[in-house]
Length: 414
Image (cartoon, rainbow, N blue to C red; front, top):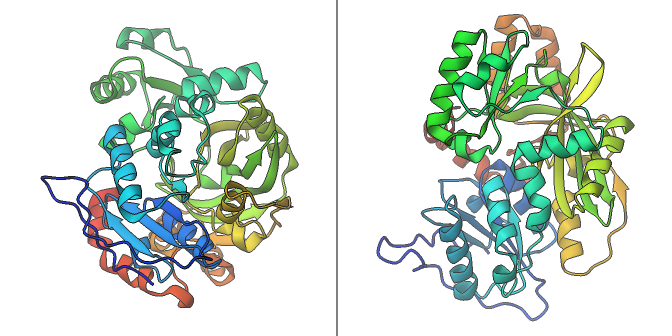
């Protein structure tokens, strides 16, 4: 069924796809276009492919989802970061492969923003489940996120919004502090970091000046550093519609990489924590949210409060934990998009997910630093329920990922 993972475009014509459309059976359901082919995208492919839904994976990197047995078309394009280029590519691809009525699944924040801002144009060909821009803007820019959180009495770390280096003098708070971007994409792709730690005022000024050269003025925030590693971080995951969760799950990060400001989870468990459901639903209702979402929190042991960090308006890295916990998030969204009824469901606690590729080095670092013991770490390796990439039913993506390790290390820092 797979087309072979090709379809690379030429330099002269960025929309000259070599992949040929295939003949469709009259009874074939609408397909799905997955933007991004790493393990997160692979999880969407497997979720939908298991139900017989045709899949087109579109990526601008060497990735693994194109090699899944569930992938119908695997397309590599030059650029999905630039908004205008990404939209033109999607529309051209939709016309070339006749993807009319297929559901779009973004996996990165800039893709959500692009789909949201070009909904009407894209909707002429695709089903677009990304929230409208009036909703997305509350998640896209953390200045908006925290402003709304304050209005809704949702706790978040104390945060300052300096415009210049001189403004840093007005911050009276104990160190260490965190320097993080209001808009992640402008900082993350240049530094491969979510945030920087500043241990003193001199370091804060130097890092701030360096960051502003990347993002431009006004986009860097200074934030109180909540003590603790990934074990203090929690997530509310949902398919949210009409002011309520259709599917939901609460999770706890047990390990992440890097240790302090994790770019991604490496070991996660589903838990029962109603307090996070209450806080998250308050935020999502206020923004009239529709779609898949992960709301991230960190527990501040100093005052016992769960403090909101981020809201991700898309699938998240460990979303396949939901399938094992009884909530298949991508499939729920797909069913709703094609007009099929969806029964509400809630994830069961006590289910665990791991990404061995990053968790094993993370575990050894944690053992070397004394954050965990060898006994505790190896016990967790014997008890997980779901692995991010490896499964005997679809083995090739795991083999390809092993071959891509040098590329992934250079591209993403692991």
